[in-house]
Length: 269
Ligand SMILES: Nc1ncnc2c1ncn2[C@@H]1O[C@H](COP(=O)(O)OP(=O)(O)O)[C@@H](O)[C@H]1O
Ligand SMILES: [Mg+2]
Image (cartoon, rainbow, N blue to C red):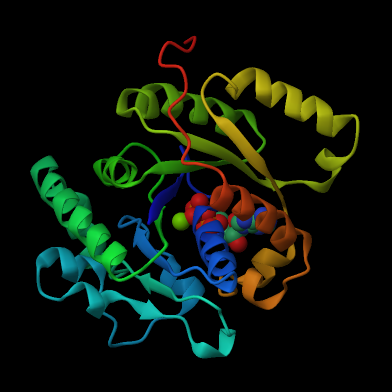
């Protein structure tokens, strides 16, 4: 089983949207995929997927009150996926979020060991992939998510805030943790795909990042995504739009390429 997280320096880069769509594409291709919402600070996957009042959360698993099967929610059969896609949510209740935010380092270390056993249980259940939706930034919970993963896919927009922030975590977090990464740009506006701009953009990005990571691709900004009001997985509903076809090419690379190794430790600061 491969386990990876989608992470970023700042919020709003599209991690949750991409996690759901990447998982759906893999499941359409016959892979068994578990998705864990480990963004305890701002749980969101339940909005995209829908939640039942009987749902048990990853928080309950960490409390030891339920088993790992109890927290897995299978996607409805109406989506006709060739593989299994099961999602475990994090508790969106404000009190639960506040409790999570107040947990100390020791609690997070204990949570890490429980999450490592959860990962083993998912591998034993026959899942081919576990995909982790992470909180942005460098909080304990994000670091746990990175430690759990075989590699991370960093999600960034094409702007200097995200360029600087991504360099910051690559040098300050991923290099010391010795964790391999890919970099995926999301919400790329259509004019950026026109020449000569496209080549210029790729050259600038290569100069900045090639010592530290491998660029996976550029996912277009697609205005109809917000039209789904955050409650639609476009890979399941609109398979021909550029957002989905672009993402399918990215997923093919993730599926076929070996787990990325950490790049040069001595990369220039
Ligand atoms: N490629 C895209 N094109 C247009 N809107 C997008 C795209 N990817 C994500 N979004 C939108 O951006 C917003 C933030 O996405 P979200 O997945 O919640 O980000 P994060 O999990 O990184 O905070 C949402 O409104 C989502 O619909
Ligand atoms: Mg999110």
